[in-house]
Amino acid sequence: MSILTGGPYYHMVGRTGNNVGRVLRGKNVFSMRPSPSQKPPTSLQLAVRLKLAMMSDFYSWVTDLLDLGFQDYTAGMSAFNAAVSYGLRNAVTGVSPNFTIDYTKVMFSRGKLYNVTNPVAETAVGAVVDFTWTSVLYEEYASADDKVSIVFYNPALGNFVVKMNAALRYAQAYEMHLPLDWSGAEVNAWILTANAEGKMVSNTSFVSELTIL
Image 1 (cartoon, rainbow, N blue to C red):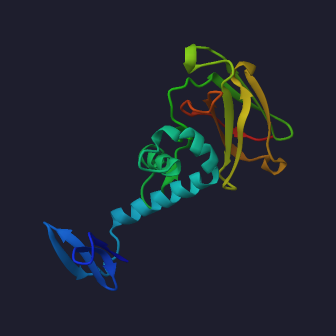
Image 2 (spheres, rainbow, N blue to C red):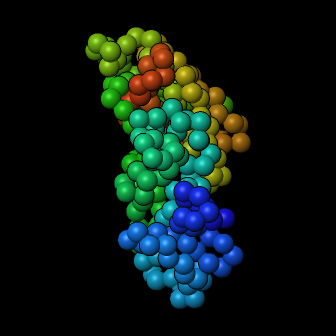
């Protein structure tokens, strides 16, 4: 659809049929609508598409968490796009077409809040994971009532388990129950923190790769 700017005798901007109108150096210019390129994509273009598809699929399952974790990076883009952009720059490894995600570099949150200190995850029978951490308080950047969230990812199944606001910082422990059919699986675990109002978050910390019992 084209738009008349300033009335019926002024510039027409936009598309009408196969014509595209635009203002160029003060003059109204019409040209044919460009046709899709018939050239095959270059190897670089294919590599970019592969990486983008991989990171977009990975993050697409945790959009609620990203809305919290990337809230400070949404100028001109969504929290999801900000997370994907970070992942493309920092968490993709390998050579095309065999790209993989470096889970130790993945972020679900970025911010100025201090994360919990020395997080440890230990597995127990029944698909249980016991988390412990140290609570170090520092002004508004680390309060006792900050909320701790825990993230698990099972690469074999392509599934996430996310427990947002699992515990408060001062609790220094949380017992996580995973699906029983995850027993025997290798999974990755992360931890992050948000303040009580949910307006300030920490960077995500990768805890470890675990074998679920």
